[in-house]
Length: 147
Length: 147
DNA sequence: ATTCTTATTAGTAATCATTATTGTTACTGA
DNA sequence: TCAGTAACAATAATGATTACTAATAAGAAT
Image (cartoon, rainbow over all chains, first blue to last red; front, side, top):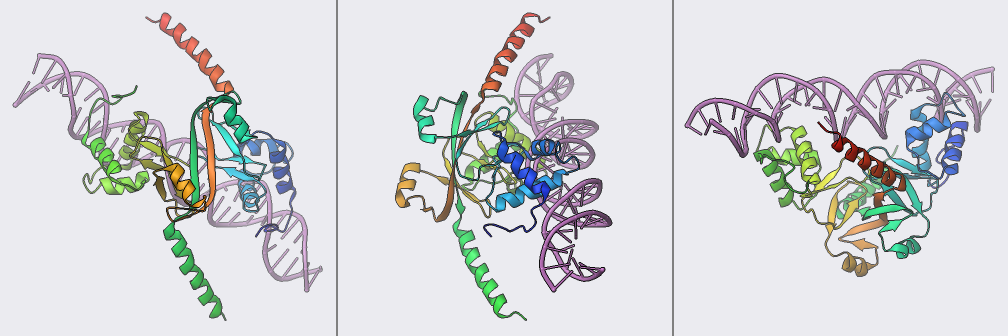
């Protein structure tokens, strides 16, 4: 699945990726739509969503869907940390986490007034692990019985 | 705003808070609706949402709105860390973060298979800080000119 | 206790981000 | 050249949440 889930490199997808990577901001799908439309006036919001999804699945970009309303997208696929404004929703990168933290003891970071730090562990819970196992068995059985 | 934003202690709000605090799981609004309906069969989903919102604003519960679809709610208002299943959306508490991490070096935690750790800094960006200042000025001016 | 005020409710409609569907276009490989 | 299909634009559908409205009931005043 790594590379090449998609087999046609359309102009739409090229421009979406280009523009997203060029931007230092972390636009929402709608914002990106507005930007890409300057080059491709007929492109639809659905195409933006569809391609962003594909690019995420191919690890070429990141989807930043914290709570709140709209998800935001980051042209940098490498994991790094983010600063989010709880008022306007704006998202900034943190280049060097450790330095950033040392600098002023969590109170301020890139001009932000930090309210709190959220740490979240993402993984697969025990039940879903079990389910995945039995699902795999089912798949194997089905494969065997094919045709 | 701390306590007493609401002035009537309705049965609906009591039961919502009670049930949420009793549960160790972190139910969605819809799940909580199903549960509370056993005691108050006529309660509507809107009432659940409205009261959860009020309780959050009064720091009596927490809203856990990571990305994904539904937000989840936690009857414990004190900050602590969470484990989230990226498959089913289930959320568990982490009681002692440091011990938890030491235990098995991020690979496993409470039976979860950890995929990654998300760190997010939440705060107010420089622009919103400026805006807040001018807004306050406006408020002061308006107060002066009252009546 | 009874009345009064209005915060809160149930029920429902509206909103908004996102996803799915549909009919069409245009690659791609035979 | 043509069949098959990825991807498109346009638009409808979905699903969580919020807003609206008339009815209800909590708590104060009488």
